[in-house]
Length: 489
Image (tube, rainbow, N blue to C red; front, side, top):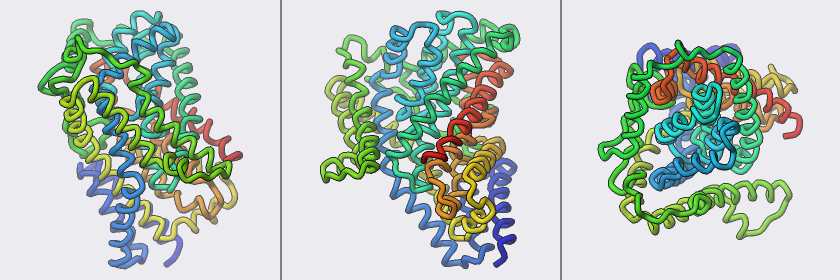
């Protein structure tokens, strides 16, 4: 089959996925499978080869990352139930002071809090950020809103155990330790620089409180609703999106069941009167697990081998240790009821993530089996910057169309994943570039946009500035940080 036909059919498959999701509002899982089947049949794989690529890709990626995602989400659910976010924000304010709070918020949300499901993280942290905003000086509200938006979205795709980062590592076969270290190298300067750029813009007249913030009465209502959501027994329903999408859900994905439910024994009110764990102890098991993963990557690069260290540094074992340790601490201090409620939350949250990740692997495997790698490899020759910029552009375009950071990143990475072995490009760079591109133009198709708009008292115009422009700046900064890494990785 001619190379032109393969390239054209790949483009048609990706375009068909976008059209099915955007125009016909078909569920992304079904759309991705249809696109993969079309590509397999038109690329000459035959019926058996196509089905084998779709099912094999689904199973392979879930074998690699399924437990990692589940363990990460469950650990985050435990931390949420134990009130970790509220306490961490208070500690950051004491340590960093008002002036440094936006930067500290962006860095912390994008790194230490990425095990907490994004809906939960945003619903709990936004009211806290809003209460802090008046204390940090000029343009406090938009600065905190920008810091939250940048930290949330960047953490998803760059920082293990963020679901996007773990999924990208699985699709491209990137060792999780390598993804963790290089993701950290990228995400910290990205969020700091992007937050700094937005701070300058906001302070120089770009923010108009009269037009960019809600009326005081409406803003107060939003804040009251958000505060009451933290302790309600009936559950949080943060879905203010115009068509009922969940966070990072593309058009037609359907509204996810509200993950931030709180049951008896959860929330600040229910914890009143109980002794509290030191904050470092509460995060200790998760930090230990991430350090074990990073240590494994360092030891592997140094050629050091030891059976015990190798076992502990395996990502599945390291995150299992983090989950068991967090569960033991939360159960001992707050009771078994809280643990059981957190486990229920975690199972609800992880289901759709796992299925979307699996079908993303199906499409990536089908693209690889179609032979696109050799074709693109000859096109890009020995250049490393060109495919990285291309994967950034593909992910950006897909995100604008689909509205899902995770799906657009996985799809873009799948298209160019076969290029890596042909031209000697490290797959981790493709993963990072895909994540960077998928951040571009977070807008009204994302529930993150609407949550930030309502919970932080912004108008739609204001949210376009803090969320859409802020995260887009982070997207550009990230690819500029990633490109030099291609020289040394």
